[in-house]
Amino acid sequence: MTMMMAIAALVAGCDGGNSPPPAQERAVEAGKAGKTSETGAHVAQPSSPPVAPLPRPMLVGESIARAEWAKAKAKVGCAPLALVSDAGADGAARRAEFSGGWGVAFDLPGRRSAYGFAGPGVLPQDRAPAEAQRARLAKQWPYRMEIDTLPAPSFAGYGLSGAQPYPTGNPEGNGMESVAYLRVGGQACTYNVWSRISRAHLEALLGHLRVLP
Image 1 (cartoon, rainbow, N blue to C red):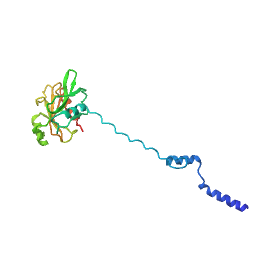
Image 2 (cartoon, rainbow, N blue to C red):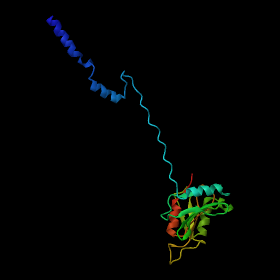
Image 3 (cartoon, one colour):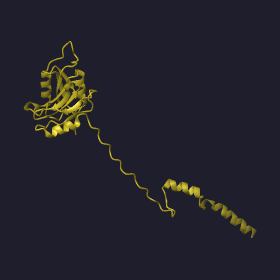
């Protein structure tokens, strides 16, 4: 009997790895594998609802540009534009009258139509190839600007109203009427952009314009 008891004790000691783990260890393992029911069955966790994408911020003058473009008779090939910024001018936007086309003007205190942009529709000469348009604007305007923030090729000819250079006494055109004729890649019209603030402001507007989707 003494020999049999010793053998039984030895077998019990060797079988320790198969004994059930303490309750605390079981709880930790259950947390790693996912929650389980009291019977040991896996309980599926509800998935998180999909997060809706945030709406795109409205660009400056966008709502008016869209509304005026939708009403325009001559809008094919002359998509609406809007500004990512008006370069700190903070004018009040309103519709601008462009016969057959569309436009957005911005008023400042004491200065109506201080700046703006418009799509006046497509003229027969507007349908010429881009290089012909580039040469036309270079011949017509004293200054030129390549614009890489719009679809390529995009470029403008600009200066004072009447396609005049800025005077030596006011090379920045402060308080004068600066105007640009703008061509945008993929569009057929010649856009008008203007500023009665300064030459630098007009150049900033040209860089801030975007084609609306």
